[in-house]
Image 1 (tube, rainbow, N blue to C red):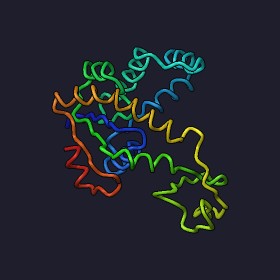
Image 2: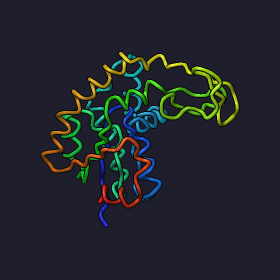
Image 3: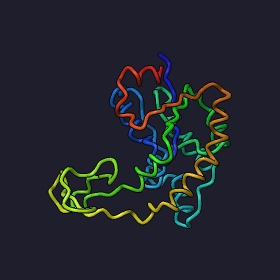
Image 4: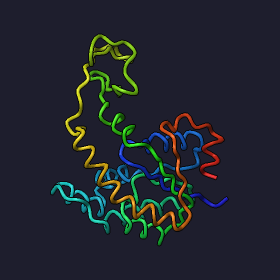
Length: 218
């Protein structure tokens, strides 16, 4: 059977990583390729591309498309015999065109999650200061509540107080979502014309059965 190639697409907080983990758990022959992991791997191993990435990151600048494209292409070429799902790329129309010029994409899986759900997921995030277990004030709080915004950690029993992360303000999140939607629109239109889009309209992909996911992947 020929390898299958998928792209997962969705706003920050849509659950891309969670859905990819679920797919890999059910279908271990599919590799989850995270562009964030590829960047860190190249920087850590001090590859030529990694050194260039580090220069831009250290200067607080965005990594140019030609370097991002080269890093992604290099990684995917190493997986030429494998099925994979690409997470975090493409983010722009030019990146989508670059990807299509080198690889055949079977499907683009779009997580269609309402903005109010995304806001709850991101603005409610907090973790145990002792063991690091992650919770959500709105969707996944610890079981034992002591008071308003105070709980006992399910994992280690430590006291936890909800403190919103400094970069998780509502204003900052609205800006991130606006930027995502602006960049996403031409990418989605590009793949729509190619007939590659599969919209997944669920707020919790963990509720999807193996058969449902198999139908999505075809």
